[in-house]
Amino acid sequence: MGSTRDLETEKSDSEEAVRGKGTWKQAAFHVATTIATPAAYAPLPFAIASLGWPLGVSSLVSATLATWYSSFLIASLWKWNGEKHFTYRHLAHSIFGLWGYWSIAIFQQVASLGNNIAIQIAAGSSLKAVYKHYHDNGTLTLQHFIIFFGIFELLLSQLPDIHSLRWVNALCTFSTIGFAGTTIGVTIYNGKKIDRTSVSYSLHGSSASKFFKAFNALGTIAFSFGDAMLPEIQNTVREPAKRNMYKSISAAYTVIVLTYWQLAFSGYWAFGSEVQPYILASLSIPKWTVVMANLFAAIQICGCFQIYCRPTYAYFEEGTGFKSNKSSSYFPFRNRLTRLIFTSIYMVLVTLIAAAMPFFGDFVSICGAIGFTPLDFVFPALAYLKAGKTPNNSKLGPFLRPLNILIATWFSLVAVLGCIGAVRFIVEDIKNYKFFHDM
Image 1 (spheres, helix red, strand yellow):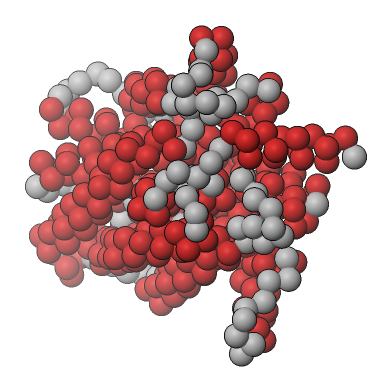
Image 2: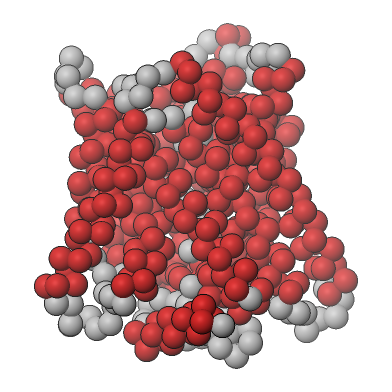
């Protein structure tokens, strides 16, 4: 009972502290920044290559539609029982009780930490590519750029909350569009310069290897639609929160559909089964556009990293009684120093793991399998069923129930298979590479 009272106290503190101020457009920036990142785009051609054209296309399209639908389900649960639920874990607690709270808390931490390790590797890779363009014989390694990025993120981490990142994420959203447009164009250009008869679309390796690659690809696709922060984002939106959130999700997914599919399919078309896990590593000409795509990637990842470290910061604030958003004008030195110490510890941990094991594709897959799949596919469907939400149109009721059961069942299986594939490749990479390898 004590734990329940603590949750209720924590929730009431949040209600006093936070009031939705943002517009649906600002929320769309947040949603697009958390989902449509270069780290999510970049491995999609490799995932398609691991599955082949028929299964790859159907997996990507079905995942797009399923996660779009699941996002609407989460948004529809705002005030489902007459009360506001400001975080994902509080929403889970209101529907499933204490086990729901802690389940979401664990999955959210796995997703947030795994995502930030993966995208820090991606940011370091992009910064290194820009550096090598101007200093081909330079001595700086991938690890140096991972550290540089970590220092910059530590500075951004001193901003108090998600709403304070709205202009950062607006810039990141435009960088997302710039990255997608540039990368798609350069990919098609490179594809046309390649002798098309030399491009193979066949699946390589033994039967066991093909299966593990396919499992890994499912986790990668799940990662590409990761958004473990929808209730937190919805909390920043002014009333009517549901309607505004529906609009922001639709706007964000319009960008996603127009860019994800094109890059995934054009990347696989251009390079076939030889496409790299990080698509930018497959691009070579013209060099200035490759540099530009890498710069867009690094800028966009700055905002995405911040969105995903906020759940961890929130646990710290709740555990210590320190509330950074208690007042926009009252943020004393003691709180600033405490925040600096904690965020420094977090950044050192993430940076150390990213630098020691820079296996981008592996982290993407395992994070998608055991972090984002439960949060973005399984939980929304189960929560909607448990909450007893039924549409006013009775004709939809018999259809939505089996649909939600199907989504929850299938993506639970995807989580298991993706985890198996990711663990296998991590073990192989550790055998083949030394720690702190300059990839």
